[in-house]
Length: 291
Length: 291
Image (tube, rainbow over all chains, first blue to last red):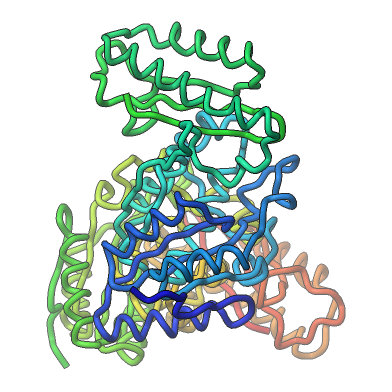
């Protein structure tokens, strides 16, 4: 295990540098995996990198807080940027060959407003897309650029952002990108809270309450496993319960796991996923469990 | 010179087949050029293929009448499909290694309506985009797919579709596709009419009149070369003149060649392009000349 990051490329010339390095790897017939992140790395990210290293000879990790996936009133400016700590964690893990940290100007030279955009209809306007219009288009638009810069064989994505995983998988399949998507399960804190960079927005009391989101999802999971099929009832009970303890829930929904469509009564349990988004103080938390 | 098409892949499994072939070429370190067409090949297309063969060891020509770039009332169904003749022409030329003719289902398995789409803001709504909303988005969306399927080093595009050339170049640069765009000059019939598959919509009398579009562009070119700078006057004279002889012109415009912006008085002559679109009978003709 190499206890370091082999190479860090950031800012101007970094795209050229990545291409040069990738070209050398290709010449040597080495496979490449990409783990795109917005930094502020936690164990969830590190688990993606570990998985990447099992799928490819070379691992690229990118850190880029992508402006086009944040809405007007959202936390783009306050999103935690912790590059020095991130580098230490990656260095200690020793699995990343190339850390790519482009600037906004590198990725959006025309400016975020007038840049070329990818639209993934349908999927993008559901659930998180309903309250975050443009979010998934921003995600698709930035990942498209990273795929073209790094041309990986494998793209690693976390299942915590389940809708994002489906949107990006659809983009990749439909636009015929020659890359395989591999997803990794949610990592949780010991009390069940899904790991997330935004957990640091939680005050002490909120942090104690936060695992309740996962508890509610597990209760729906349990009910589904026992044969419950009145999804709407399960959803409204969870919403009421979350509100009661102090969450501002956006949605709790039972959906078809393959495409997020609303399931009809005949759906089999293992075809379902239960997803939620809820605010707690300044933190917008999301989570999901397979039924 | 190989007097044949090395390989023709069409319909189901053709994408897989192209990838396999391209993989073999890549393994042999051979470079690849793509000439995307909608078929009904004429000398203009063949000149693109010739240029392609000068830029890369392997030449892929694609034939696909792309539904997403046609508007509601447009000629999608009547667009000339002449695959057997096209194959003969390509075979006689002997420069194409792979002819790729996918079906609509291969390229848009989700259906043309719900497919992932590329938006190129600004450029796409000007000129031809003003009367053909969605056209350039359809063009960008299909070329993105063809780039991902064929992963060429070089993409060949004709300058007759000048706005398309700029839209696609912007898409490629902004989305960071690792491909170089090479453009080829307009080929003309002996009377000056720009070669186009749609010229066959012209009736005999219309065909005789058609070169007048180019004549009007040349007159503006001549005036600009003599120092004229009242673009609006030049444009309206040409529009009036085209109407008088029986065209239904959509636009005649002097624009900045680099980005199609309206030039200010200080623009240098060699920075300009003069573009026109005009209907003659059932044919929508486009043409352009550099000033």
